[in-house]
Amino acid sequence: MKTMFQISKKSLPTFILVGVNVIVYALTSIFGGNFLETDPSVIVGFGLYTPYVLNGEVWRLLTSLFIHANVAHIAGNMLFLFIYGLRAEEMFDVKEYMAIYFLSGLAGNVLTMVADLLTVGSLGVFAFSVGASGAIFGVLGAVMIYMRRSIGQSIMSALIYVFFLFTLNIAPGVNILAHLGGLVTGLVLGYILAATRKRRQYVTYQYNYPSSYGQ
Image (cartoon, rainbow, N blue to C red; front, side, top):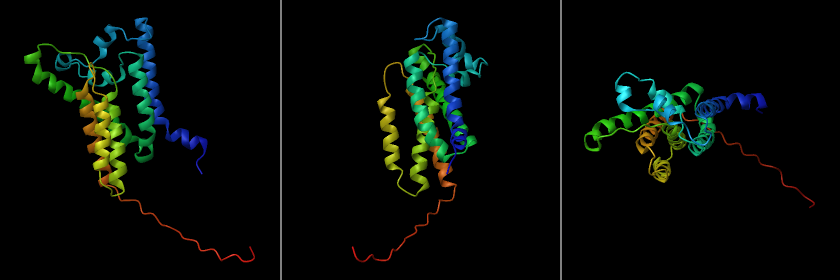
């Protein structure tokens, strides 16, 4: 039986990620003087912006994952991170979990930059991008694909489910490329982890009880 200490210790990675994101949002709210929306100067200073990254500010690939545009943005992201993060902790160790989270987030940002470079000639403008959605979609993809692949079942239902959630998040102002890059990365990493591990063997015990008389 797990103790309360074991449960809280196991859940520590998700609580840390949620806590860091919330603390960063609180600090940026204090700095900007507005709790409902992040001050534009914060987004400009720490968000993903392709020209700045190409000019050497590569740290934006990471800092942008912890900046959120408004309170609804961070509330939605942290809700889904909490839900799927706790499931991820049941399947992956801390290093695997963190690798999935950050590699998915970085992949979403890189895909965003590639699309920027391919389309800037026609659009003529770059946009800032912030949020942990790409990383969270990566965790979602890894969890769903791992559950199906690790027990030898078809992964098709998992793919249909995650891409259905992906389509639900398509809306104006949403960086769907960050979502897509993170999701695909999570699916690949989850599949690799499931395929390279030995399947768990389950033993079924059957008990036969003697028939009762006189009832």
